[in-house]
Image 1 (cartoon, helix red, strand yellow):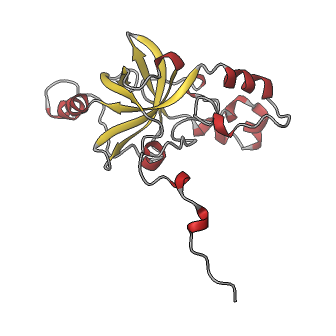
Image 2 (image 1 turned 30 degrees about the vertical axis):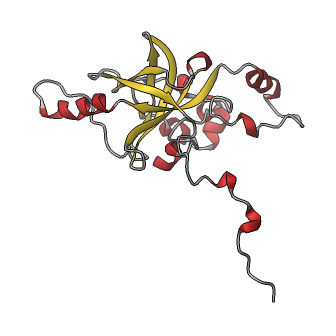
Image 3 (image 1 turned 90 degrees about the horizontal axis):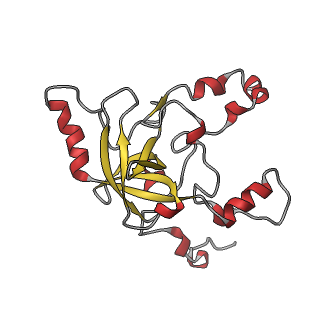
Length: 213
C-alpha cells in the first residue's frame, strides 16, 4: 500500500471510501456488509464518511475522463473538470514533528497516538486527517506512508485548489478525535511524488518479443 502513496495511485479502502452505504438497496444486496466496512473510521477527520468521499478530479484522475458518451453524473463532472475545487497533491511531513510523536511514548503524561511505520496496516481502520492552513480546514490527508526511497513521511492530500501551490506549508492534525493530537507541519509537493523509473516514458516497441516459430 505504500507504493500507492509514493507512486501517486489513490486506492479505495486506503485513501478514500466508496459511497456504497448511501444506497440502501445496495447495502441490502451486500447483506449489510457495507455498513460494517466503514465502522472503524480513524484519524482527526472523525467519524463522518461524507468528508472522506472523493470525486475523480480530486483524486487526480481528470486526465482519464472522457465526455464522448453519456453517463450518470456527466454534467456534474464536467463542471468539476472546468472549475476544480480541489487538487491531489503529495504532502511531505516535517521530520522533527514526527520525531516528537515518537518521543512522546517515552515521556511522562499522555503520549500522542503512535505513528506506525512504514504505514498503518490495511484492515486496521480507514484513516483520514484534517489539513489546515491558518486554522482553516483546506484538505484531507490519507495514505500516510514512510518512503524508504526518500527517507520521508508522505501522504496524499485532496486540497483546496488555491492552496495547492508547490512549497505551501500546511498543518496535518495527527491523532483520532478524543485523543491528544499533534499539529504536524507538512509541505505541498509534486504528485505523483516518485520521480524516477516511471513507465510512461517507456517505448513498448523496445520491449523484446519472442520470435514467432
